[in-house]
Image (cartoon, rainbow, N blue to C red; front, side, top):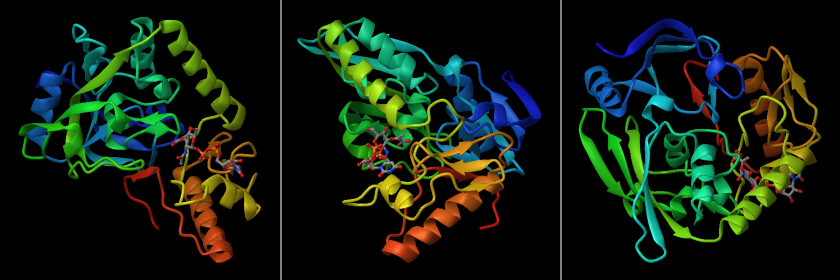
Length: 292
Ligand code: EPU
């Protein structure tokens, strides 16, 4: 075994919520080849990307957790074909870092991604996006390792992308992708990024630990609006609080447990359902064991 393995490693340092119990075994592969060998050897592995869209249980995660980080973050820009450039990048690369690299090369398509926390792999798995764009718009191919260790390359159309979701099989690990970008003026790209970022800074509590939007927007409505309407802004359980700035964010005001966050989530689900009949669908993924 080449890659480094930590035992009982607290995951709170790797989640944007700053919450999460220990991983029984936390594996840090040094490159994608090692990641693939861990996946084929272990079968069931929890893959930790940027830790930005998850709530890890206070008990932690049993078995193997694999952290795809800067070691699985190579990126390569193909020569331009007309206006189009294909970028090939590995799953551990930060989405914001990639959007910055693209901007500096005068490549458009990733402006929406600037400032979204998380890795490329995680962003593809959930089809991350904003109203300005989503991963689906630029994904040309995605390479996954299946639970039995086979490496499979899917075209963008085969990934089953829809609003904040994808059709990758449970247990598929995303290791690499190709994205299609277009040449554009870098000042214009920078300006679009700045605008998106400013808008988000004005409406979202980006200065506090959170996991981004907790719920998906229901058809024809907004989760934030529904949660605000039931009077939950500022509602707290322990250290978890519905943000005063944006009601679809739960912030960790200090020392929140995963149990606190789940209690707030359930209260929002219950009150919104009782008041408006809408069943909110969670955008964040619960990892590990929870008493629901
Ligand atoms: N609203 C309220 N109360 C609130 C929050 C929002 O009434 O507390 C209302 C706003 O006034 C607005 C509407 O709800 O009319 C939508 O709010 P906003 O413009 O903030 O966007 P959003 O739909 O809540 C979505 C994404 C964000 C993304 C932004 C900007 C989802 C679930 N969320 O938020 O994505 O940054 O648009 O493009 O689709 C994420 O997915 O983690 C995320 C942060």
